[in-house]
Image (cartoon, rainbow, N blue to C red; front, side, top):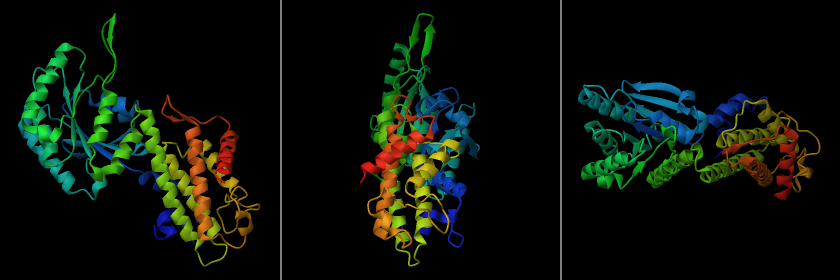
Length: 391
């Protein structure tokens, strides 16, 4: 990051000193790490049920569907940093023609992609374990991913009894005849939701955590950002989710601190404070996206105002308020004289890491999300304590 305006984009007007919160929120959401997953399989294999089980209830319903081609649809969930590519219509009677079209459309979609963020990073080939046999289309779907070198996991769905387990073992042998080297044993048997056999017997959901672990392992080294996006979005391995969120947030703090340093090096005395305030506000919005917090809620607005007020940078204008930066050692003497690059970096890092600590404090390990108390004052009090701790 060579310049603070690269960081702020169109959310800050240098001439007026005005900060546009809505643009900052949108920028934060658009720049969130993303993972693209192609979900292959015929209708009825349980793709939607699987997606909702991994990423949260109603995810598919909440996402925005956008047809790519006749046989591919994108389901975009921006707040989770997930884009799902769903195959369509491959159960048709003339599936040979359909599969040929799908292959051509898939290739065209990838070739027309603007960059890596618009290409599938991982593939799940879903096969219903209660099927009579492996269909040719299932093998074709595996080949489709293998030809494009997209790491894949074969997911056997509705594995509820011995018959399904026997099918899985036979199917693995058939698939391995051609794709053993490509798949490298990436087979997972799941039951996405509890399945009631009769009034006395219910098969529990199973295999989902294993799917997360195997999927994580399948990401290549060069796709770390996509892997982190996946781990943040999934809702079953909560410790991994929290770790990925914190790691992502810390990186954002580092980038914001560098941007603040360039503002602190500004040659115009006193001009840096409102810019640094805008940078820190943007940083908070970006951290919120890491933790899937609703930036538009009234509570989040109150929290941002309180956080910025603690550091006396709440007034995003041409002047700053009194008492300044009392929670940052040595910063109080800088008012009116500008903030040095070194101090700007230190302030921003302190604010960012203290805010992450607050989010971790209120993170519910059972629900896998931040649960704030009703009173915003409790949150600001916790922030002050965390910021003091950083002294």
